[in-house]
Each structure stands twice: as C-alpha cells, then as structure tokens.
Image (tube, rainbow, N blue to C red; front, top):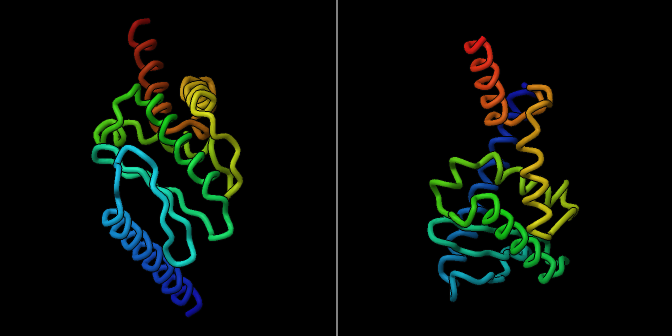
Length: 160
C-alpha cells in the first residue's frame, strides 16, 4: 500500500514537472523577440532565462530570489560551451548524437544548484578531458566512452 502511494506521488510530481515545462515552453515561444539573445521572463514565482537557436531551446530557471544576471551568465556559458563541444554545429541532430557531452557540460556548470563554472572555454576543456579519459573503469565512463574503449580492445585483440 505504501509503495503504491509513493509511486502515485512520484507520478504526480513528474506530471506537475511536465506541465510546468510545457507551460514555460509555451510562454517563452509567445514572448520571443530576438532568438539569438537570451530573454528573461517570470512564471509561477520562477525566473526563466531562455534562448532559442535553430531547433534547440536552452532554458535556465531559478527562484524569484535569484539574480537574473547570474542566470543569464549560466545560460550563456552553457550555450557557448555546447557550441565549442559541438564545434559550432548547434542543431538537434548534433545535440542528440553528442548528448553525453552536453550532459557533461551541464554537470561541469552546476552541482546541486551551486554554480561551479560559467566560462565556456574552461567547461569545454573539462568535458574534452573527461571524454578522452578511457583509462577509467567502465562503471565511471559514459556510454560513448565505454563503447569506444570496447571497440579499441576488440580491434587490438583482432590484430594480434
């Protein structure tokens, strides 16, 4: 009975989160003035900073107590680091193919709501360093890294 209640509560929270995201996306599409610059809006006591580039949407949200300039800096740092990691090809296909690198960019910027880094060059360098580190155990590698390591080992074993 308790497990069922927890599952229903978790489902309800996920549904609320989805509705919030859908409403933010709808409101931001209405208010977009210049797609190449960051825009700021308020929604349900949250500050939403967003930027649309081609077919991708970048959002950073914070409570109404947060400084808008810091949120804009985080968004710009994330966008620029994604551009560096994707080598300037910021579109949906490249983003999906390199989703692991984009998630690493997010991980380098923020840790549990604490902003660690906003400089795009530093973020991209850390992501590149982490993506090259094939000597790490398989449990600590991303899926792409693990597949590359397995491919390398298979190639070596076939060439021997």
